[in-house]
Amino acid sequence: MRFFIVDDDEVVRSMLTQIIEDDDLGEVVGEAEDGSFVDHHILESKKVDILLIDLMMPVQDGIETVRNLASFSGKIIMISQVETKDLIGEAYSLGVEYYITKPINRLEVCSVIQKVSERLRLEKSIYHIKQSLDFALGKAKEENPFTERSIIPSGKFLLAELGIIDSNGSKDLLDVLQYLFQLEKEKSLDYEFPLLKDIFYQVAKNKIGKTASPEQIHKEMKAIEQRIRRAIMQSMSHFASIGLTDFTNPKFEKYASTFFDFAEIRKKMLELEGKTGSSIRLNPKKFIQVLYLEAKRLIG
Image 1 (spheres, rainbow, N blue to C red):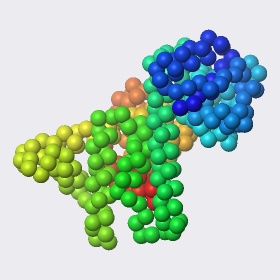
Image 2 (image 1 turned 30 degrees about the horizontal axis):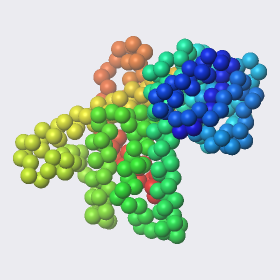
Image 3 (image 1 turned 90 degrees about the vertical axis):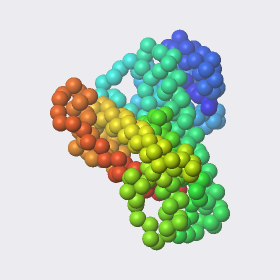
Image 4 (image 1 turned 180 degrees about the vertical axis):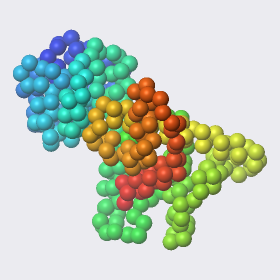
């Protein structure tokens, strides 16, 4: 990954550069002390993947700079010690999705950059898959214009969007996508979304082998279900946290009510605020069904 750093504090620029290079996160290809020194042409010429930019700068602040970089195709990480909802909300509306707070913390910097880098790689992977499909199909619409391999990159991209790409249940969810994709190909027009217990049974059977005993398969089924439920709850917490910060956040609006029952998201938000309420109910079938349909749509 290629980075460009904009911050009026030379010490901060130096610290970020050292962290990026010492932890092999990528290469810092440029820096500036104010947003007024940065434009789309500079970032394009240096082939910048990720821009790290300070929110508060003396001449041109981070918000104004990002607004002027609307055509920048890379990712933007905002650096700030200011956490007002208005500024954060405006940054979100301009496409900023990640923050690093001051004072600079190595673990936070590494964690945020790794997440952004992974998302970039997934987006590029999906883009190349779609390009290959368009070329192979002559951009013609066929009944089933996707391949078995392509469901996994799009699934990984969605799990990253949902905040659970690193969860213990992410591998199980990808196995579920692969099974459903293959099942739909085999069933053709007779395909109906199967029961969750049937999905978990087949995924468990494929995972531990056909020679496994019914008891072993049943035990793995339960483990898969528990890991997936924990991952779904983690994603719900992720979006509830975003919603508390900025209710108009594009990701919150796009995913929260699509993957979850919004009443349950609201309960989780109240829970994060320390307010007691009724217990939160998960709907794993809705989550998995939407995940599969969205993954197919990305490659369709």
